[in-house]
Length: 463
Image (cartoon, rainbow, N blue to C red; front, side, top):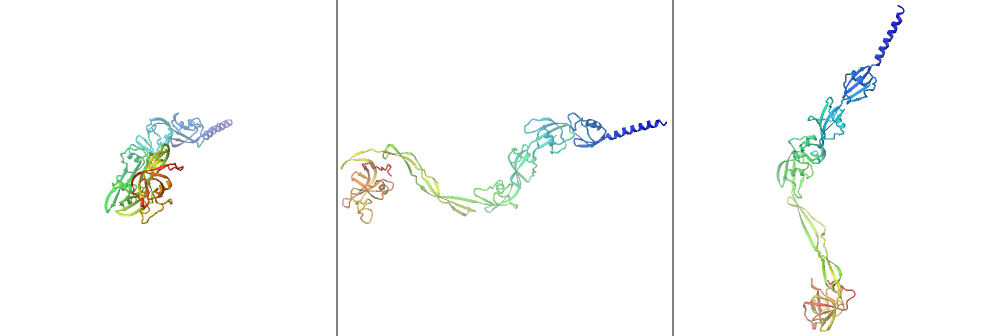
């Protein structure tokens, strides 16, 4: 009997050791399946065995962390995200495709397909729109549709300058709904809601307003809408015309009381102008005879003057403004060429043969000391010579160029250009001098011959 005690004690110790080992090796593990948490206390060590003990089924396509053959410590965690077959219609004319995802939420599922959700995009499942954070756990086969939003400019009463919005759909109305814009019967949508939606377009959603418009003393009640007074007037069929102004101004928001005053404004303009005479630009041509000319290009006269603007408001002049004098039309000169080829010719005269190098058609008049067009008798000339036969007067322009030139006039004789006269506007003119006692009256066309020698400082163009 005494010999059995040690054997019984040894067996008891063995049993206690086995019990201590069993309970000492058990561990509590947190298991998360598609976001749902549970816990299990088990003596299993590996992920594969722990999931079996928890009666959790899994496939090779599921995402399990840690791996199936990994050991889990007491207080450890196992995450299992089940594989989901997804069919996605990406929209924008792209073909649908399938892929596998381990995500729970719609936005994350799209990331597995390499796609991101942007503001205004719409994701739907079986016709029901999904938020990006909608939990799709437990659905094995997903059929999703993605509708991409397009950018457009949205103008509202609070944002008359416009703001960026995102929408999608076949029509303007669809795009507004997809962008979360509330529309009621008391609002005006521009363009009309049935208008096809085009990315980048501008859409206005504005409340209809009761307006009272005053113009020329007449009051007109209308219903209209607009981000500004000018837009509301235009849509009411009463746009500002010409220089008309409104109070409030056209660019201002519609006033709270809806009252708008239109002030008819008219502007009239007048021009006070004078002609700027064109001139002639001359070019020498040594193949043309002296005094022959050719017109190369014809110019035009110009205008200089002032503008005067008169502004009237409600029929009364409120402003008259005259500009500084300016060139209204720039003159363009004629372009001509003149001949420089000098030909010496001989003229038979009662005084014998005379050589000349130039002949000009002129209109001739005559004068004498006491027939000079003044109340006194004048005997002197511009050159200092006496007024007598053989002296010819010309305009100051000709005198400055040809003073002292020897000439011949048929029926008058040889003479010298030695005096200045008034001349006849628009004509080549000469005045033939006489003494009072041998005066002859002239008033006719004749020819003026310029006698040799040819001057060294030849004047090529007679003007």
